[in-house]
Length: 248
Length: 242
Image (cartoon, helix red, strand yellow):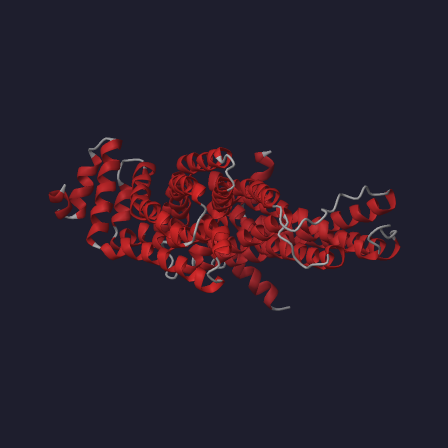
């Protein structure tokens, strides 16, 4: 596998590879999200208890679960960069951090919008909500650390260490928050049980979920490309590229 | 020891190279303590901050005894987090500025040992005083009488965790000009588990319930940070000193 992978340690090769992949992934994303969202928002049946407000589920759940996934992805990239000194792993971690923050934020906002009609309040200190909020803080910390350094290479290493510390802490935080909530037992709000989905709700959900996954892939590729360019701005191939594309 | 301190740092470091781990640890510890005792403000100010923050809460919330005793564990612990955060800057900043941190990284000893010594010194200077002063403030906040043991024990086990995790953040931000606000953004989310388990231990104690479970988890957090944090700190310092 290394033999197959090692050409892509070269920024130029990877830059062109992602450039070729972006259109395909974007077509896929557009198709999946269009089908998924239209199906989910217009044609899938309304929940028998929650009515139409249940439809926010199709956006809320993918963003919430994927935000955690993005953090794990970032941590894997950070580990690769620390262990194998892969510079591009740093760039991909830097590309992922703001996307993760936005996904976490979207999941919090949609959660609040869903909570208002269902629970009667925008926010409760529920374990899941709280740990999601803390995840947002962790993302923002990583982004802030990235921005604090002038040198991108140093920024990547420092943020990588922070990401790894964070990824060890995420399960601890998650379980401690759950424990805190069950102990304190504040305003008891009946927790949303997972609705056992019928098949005509499941399919649009799968489409939406895959759509969001590929949305992450596309945005990551775009941000990854610009990270590569800004990290290699003094290299001859970037200069040639700028000269070639500058004419357009 | 006093003579050693008077010598220039370079000789000091050469001397350090010929030492065993234990004496290297003790040397760095003593050096940090000596420096701190020459700037007593650095020790006193975080404690003063701790006292003042705790004084503000009854003023803001109102003097009802029931309310205060209900929120006392949380207030004391949050104030402890904040005062630790304030004092963290001292951990590596001056050593970074005068170059002795770089010398330590160049020494043949594992950075793990030296970093652990510096963190221990930091805890002795900031965490330990909090443990002594906290019961006094707990009296002011009308903390439930059953809770004092839990308060002391959680502080004893918990404040070292604050110093250890905090050291990671300081090591990451020591090279940055305005690292102060950034430091709090990086570190405070990581303090949450300690806060949760410590306050819930004190709450359980106030209801005369056993709190050994929470204490065991805090102890587990302490030992895992004790073993893992110095590694993160060392690699972060290598990044910061570049």
